[in-house]
Image 1 (spheres, rainbow, N blue to C red):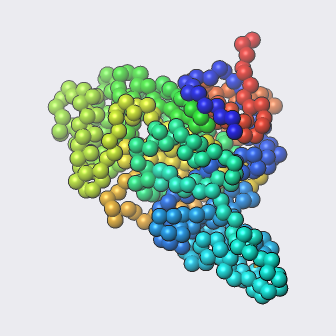
Image 2 (tube, rainbow, N blue to C red; image 1 turned 45 degrees about the vertical axis):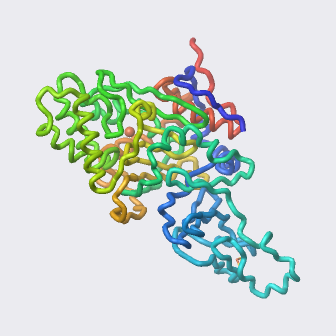
Image 3 (cartoon, rainbow, N blue to C red; image 1 turned 90 degrees about the vertical axis):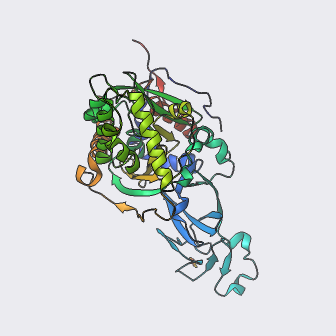
Length: 451
Ligand code: FES
Ligand SMILES: [Fe+2]
């Protein structure tokens, strides 16, 4: 497929029609034209630890069984009995065979049909080719299991090229879940996702975050994906592998204090984008660094000390050039429905999926992954948390959640022609709709002309 492949840092002003968010016909068309064609993250490889562990990945009416068939192999099969079409699995579990509860046909975990009741009735016409479970393309990258239902689609390595180039050095395959929660949300899956692929909303939605300085965002798109970072307005460092927003150096604050307060606040209100190791060092900055320490001194001390302390407990940081870290920014939209906020030893991730063909409903998942010493990974499960309040999702996410249904409702107004993302700071939203339109065969964003 024809990809928007050049690197962009700005778009011309556009208006994006509301149809993709509102229309049930559009949602139905997405089934075939989008979900049937893209590479999508079905689960994390760690969801499938033992041979025979499986996860059922559902997307609209489609269902795919993702199963570990060997210590070094994961395979995916369409979740449908080849007899009369019954679904075989739901949720996740462990098995040595897939058994159909209707008439008892069975398959081994490699998808080979191992039992047909009274097979002789078919006079030898049933073969592995027509009774085995049809396989779905699957690749692992970054600790995710990616599946694609289109045999003609480009290889994952091409599809994810900029993601692999920029995020590969973070070795996310070495990270494991720290926590994970999901809920059904009353908005389109794109409305939900778009609340997390730009930081232009920080001033309006999370005003308390600018106590440590205001930021402008840069944004870049390449291939089907886009990412953004902060430009520290007041000369602070502009990367966030520690979780710093990059502006903790505003001139009236002691950077030792500001850095700790910012990281502490993030841990308290998001429970992500930093680690206990980094926060622990930040807590001691005032004792370990002299008065008058610069932002640069603080960052260097924080990073080198945290790296040493992590190494002592068996968490070896990846070696990533500072220039690469800056270029990585803070937030990645991996088309179509995954968001990754990468850090040096951690990441905050989101996935949004349609909830059936109702354009006003989606399944929204949030999870944090982190590097742990081997054997010390926490045991986690998906927690269904339907209550979107601060009490259940902490402050920052509940602030974001507050917007999403109101955007979905607001866009339905006769007084609204379409969405007008910032051509600079919300380039990721524009790129999302350009790529989407290519898949959907629709016009997509239209130029917003000067009057
Ligand atoms: S539908 Fe599965 S065995 Fe009949
Ligand atoms: Fe937000």
